[in-house]
Figure (tube, helix red, strand yellow):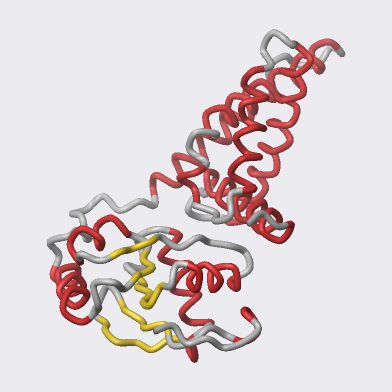
Length: 257
């Protein structure tokens, strides 16, 4: 069901995920500042394309696609933004170029805005690249901790159980259960409502470095510890049984069998 609260929460969530494109691995303030700059440039770009009429399609496609995913009941993270990112970046370039034309028309240095934008974006990506691990892969389905998780799920959960996990495909395949990824709404009560709607009985956290969904679930479990019971843990993951939903999120506590 589409509600105003759902749309508002999705807008906030997708803006947060879009800002992660500019994560430099060092300064979070720089990420936020660059994100705001790109929003301004993309807006100028969309306006410029709209005025050209003959090149309006990318701007319309971007706005239409964003409208669709914003009203979709469950936010799906960065993966839903992937089709929009190339158009978004193109609009940033068009916006910077349109500003450059206005500057040049007034006698300023041509190409300065686009040049600075590309340079700063390049530095941001190089900085992020420098923080990535380059050693042997530390994760995988054959890792001992992963095998322990698969074995536990198959042996200790019911075939009809639904599990929320940041890496659903691997666990669904090797754990032989129904697994769904979490959304990352700004309001955690929205995730509780999703858990109740799909009748999820378990949440799995970790690996800590896996992705933003894993980090979100870890915070979620920490904030709602009284409503969850830990049933398995190893060095990488932890499994929690959903005991009850918090009263402040659903109105009445409701055990999930």
